Length: 252
Image 1: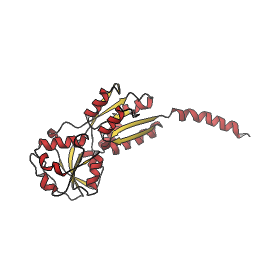
Image 2 (image 1 turned 135 degrees about the vertical axis):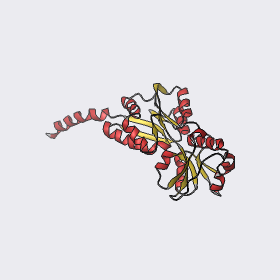
Image 3 (image 1 turned 90 degrees about the vertical axis):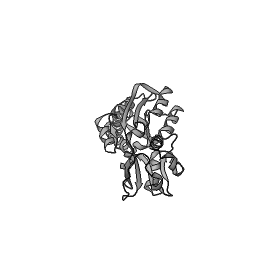
Image 4 (image 1 turned 90 degrees about the horizontal axis):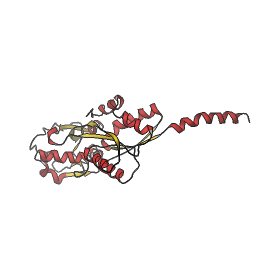
């Protein structure tokens, strides 16, 4: 069979190419999905490597990493959860950076909602009426923590606390507003960009909550060349463009 040597030769050439391809496992805050998906798709096409991304609340992801979940790169929506991963000794030496920034906004269902002046003592309770205020879990999800802190700073938390519908991550909170199940919600500006069924009606003052910083880290499990290359590429021009298009602030 004359084709047998040709087949063997073809396999000998092809095998190293496939062997060179590596998988990068990324754990990332849910609010990063659109921008990170766009960047990862381009990076995969350019390198031939595979990026597998698990999205969720930063608190959940950090706990999973600490408990031994296999991940190479972690991008958190809050410094405190990255700190906990670092305290567990799971960040590679010198491989942590403040990657992105974001803003906290009040969103409403639909496209015709009126603007809201978010200031000290604003009447959020009357705005909600009998409806719910969608937020990430206020004791653990970063967007929920920032939101509660801001409402407390503005003196309105106690009036709306009983109307809050808490979700496991910020995208779940966004979905409640997008579907109309909640008339208003507190999410990141980047989340609002990602959903055409909501309108930003106001931005929370930056001084009403801690700075919103997304730290990224290469984890101790990320030992392949592809893991390191992907982590480094997160701060490159192509990643910056993908995140800026989704409303993030780069170069924090």
